[in-house]
Length: 429
Image (tube, rainbow, N blue to C red):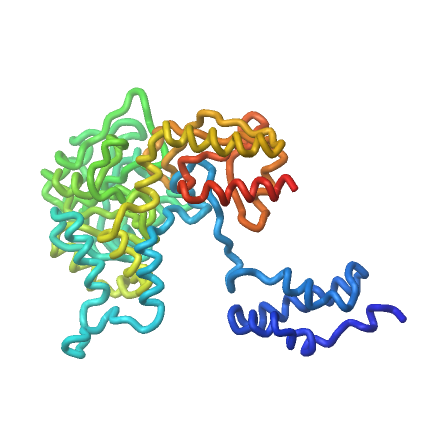
């Protein structure tokens, strides 16, 4: 008899205790899909009918999401395609704590409605005392859209031509701003803009002057720009889009603007990202003058851009908690990274793998600190490891240079070295 005629019924396979238990954890549809795929393999003659349950169990994903956790060894600290900043253990625990019902807008003492995410907002004000008030939306582009809509819809935004940047995936600052109903008043040239250019453009139709940090490129040579401190004397609000989310000065990134510094220099509003150099969840931060923040908060668009309880919890824990993984990676000791790379390469070489410890250069990424490199160390492997590591049970993503796969240790927490070792051995198997 054709074995395909003996394919077990789906309901009988789903009754297998292993599959039934997984259905409670992941959901019946995911388990049923795994069973259907195993049954199809019987039809194709790849496995026998008696193997359906075992094959389905082996194919079950660990989580009820198609996204998979990845070990980032690219040397890019804030890799946009890998989700930018990794949350700290404190932030992860905070999101789990409020995953059910939580007092996101509720005062437990009085039983009345309370300010949404007040703990996160208080933590942000404490982190940047120069800000009179703060507000949080779902990303930095949303923060800029909200500011433009609340302060300049039907009016002009004065901006240097050298700061009409593209922020990634085809999204461009000028198109983003014009979509709010504001008009752009471009001043200066691509490489040079003077105070006189701004002064000549400011008038009754000016909503605000926008200063955009070119976070993902550098212009060198015959250049000129105007600092926020000078723009503050124009008599109109000055909005500084710093992008990277650095709240205070970072000695390792001396040219990267920070929120406290911009406000101290005279900016009326600062917009920034939460999932970049702050090391928190994706969010857009507005910090600055109380009246301007309140205008943004009370605008109808603010409701559409608000963040959920998980983001608020993660943001508060990031601000109040211990050092983030991003901070640890940024401040990692190159000498220690070299020792780790040497130990890992030595163990792999002992297992017969062509592994070498080599010096490397890491970058911040995520549209932050363009041109800045950080001394690092990597394990160099034959390029043939690239795909097996990327598609293994524990995906490991590195970068290929000169025909070798480099696994950069600066973006790998020290407690994951053994995980990488196992992944490489499995990839070699």
